[in-house]
Image 1 (cartoon, rainbow, N blue to C red):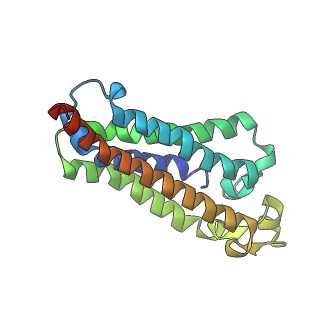
Image 2 (image 1 turned 45 degrees about the vertical axis):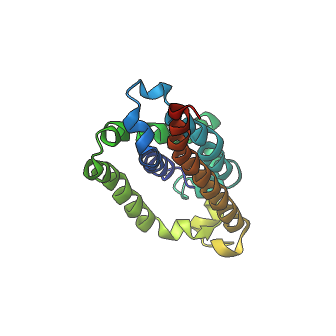
Image 3 (image 1 turned 120 degrees about the vertical axis):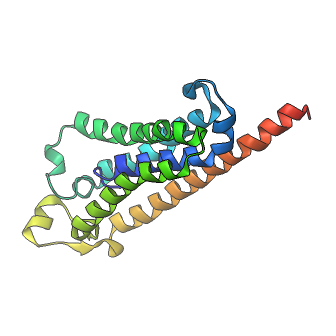
Length: 190
């Protein structure tokens, strides 16, 4: 995913993961960082979100920067900072959602997600041409060697990474839902 989208997607995923663990979060009044949902979210951020974003920076850098700057001129430390910012946003999304989930305030949770979602849609609309194009910086701005994303290596990468991301997210949500049943089993002494 392009770097400007990574923190927004991460933040929204963090909110969704907090919502998926609503029963566990509502029961647990301890520190958030000691909770199992928090641990699962950190694992998702580091094992799924970070590598997916990092893949595009490493192999399709100009697209990751939406052809705004030439990727080869960006210091690698800045690349790493942006990738880790996306991962941190996932944890931040869950952290921001925790108080609302604990109090079962769904309206406030929707309000929390509305801003980043609107910004994500606005960015996708604004950069729709860049999102659908595979090229390097010079090709994109020079109008030569440009191909549609669907017919390119980048397109296959987007498809593969979307599958990896969706599978990782589905597994994490399933694990969040299982936390409640695992707790019930422990409390009943079964």
